[in-house]
Image (cartoon, rainbow, N blue to C red):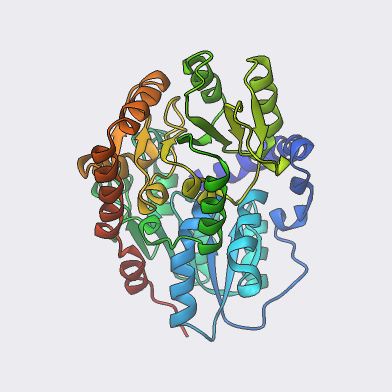
Length: 415
């Protein structure tokens, strides 16, 4: 009955979902493409046994990379089908894997859509990353005896409270997974409290991500073009955070570091450029492909798929999404490149990684944008401490690697 009520609610919300696609397409025209796939209609097929991996957007797609490589190595006769929910996730999949995988959108969780998806591709196994709990999809896999796994699973306290409201619906979905590979003990405790069974702590796949050599070379070249000033990266800023940092910048400080500001979402690039102009901040856009002038205070990173290059180009990485309650973003990539990290107070999406990084001496956690800039300034003035943090970051990532193999050992692909 709970699943029936859920399905009815989905149909009632369908007009809102279509309106959402239309609204997002105003800024990202890619939302107008492949709409049929969101309802289980596909114009291609796969002539091989299919291992289906679902990575909703950019972060999950990048996290999936080492696992996909391992699956391809272990099951060479199978074809990977990578599904997404966002155009940016799909574009990331193209840049990472090219023609090495098939890709499409996962349909909305209507019974008819998920049934059409499973009947069309006939996956022998399903692997969902992080926090993807879709009752009708999981039930349809169970009916067809398709093993389905939730891997790299994380569940913040905020998400736990939200899911708990749905009671038996979420419990039944979680119990439909063949196994769950959780990132941490806290995630395991919350998932089991919601009813999950067969939960294993396997760590975070993001510790196993390999740096893109092309991007690292690109970022290293950029750094030589920025001049002698230190470079502070504001990585993946979210709405409202740019304002916090612009207010925190000392006025008319000619010796100030170059601020490399990279918004999380491409549809906000123009809005952030407008905000910089309103603050009378001398800035340039990365897309301008021009040398950085000595009086430029902010370089606006208005490009997609180059975050590894931005990390390589900076001296210190300030991880955004953590200075307002967005839950933070991934700090592991910066640590792996030996970049000292500063993170704000709102870290619930990466709470364990932040806690371990701080304990390892790889990161500093502060309570505000003002404190973040002050911490970065102090680090730049203390070269021995700067170098210790850089090496601690690399060691921290090496220490926590290995999730890919643990997950691979857990997954049983039929045939």
